[in-house]
Length: 113
Length: 111
Image (cartoon, rainbow over all chains, first blue to last red):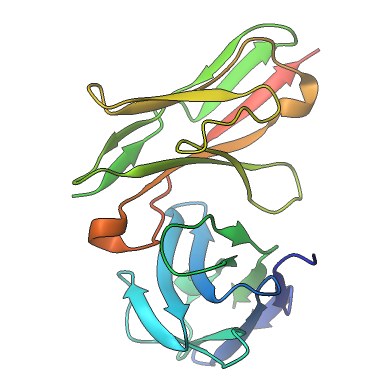
């Protein structure tokens, strides 16, 4: 099976802009989670979606949002970008919600100038 | 508060030596424990899940509920084990599938 894919792999934006990142889970997987990875804060949970519903949310401001489509693909959006949003954004998928292993994608490297 | 600590940011051993990467956690309920590994320029991947009790690439980890630890061990380190290792508990009862990652330990195995 193909693994989790994320597009784009690299993005450069300027402060104040917005950005949308996309994640395609492993075929058959229905749960998608998003994490932010930075050198200073490490890996931090953003949110999780299952059956097109947000099931869990981390401690991030409302500028960070996401959604999941009926085919389980997910997008996350960051509005009004700040320099501190520069990070590697990881998507992980699992077969079902709860009680399953999460498999990670390669990430999208976002740089905010 | 849910917390996980990996006390060593960097760990260096010689090939063939035993290696232990420490993980201590403070978690309500009965957390499930994972170890993830990230090799250079590769994606984060699952190494161990404690409930499966599997041994992957020669690594094992024992959950010590009394000491709230989940240390990762390998009796004979190999150069290809050089990578970043993350301990990650989760509590299905309190926070669903959400993984809480430690800061990670960068393991270097020298020839």
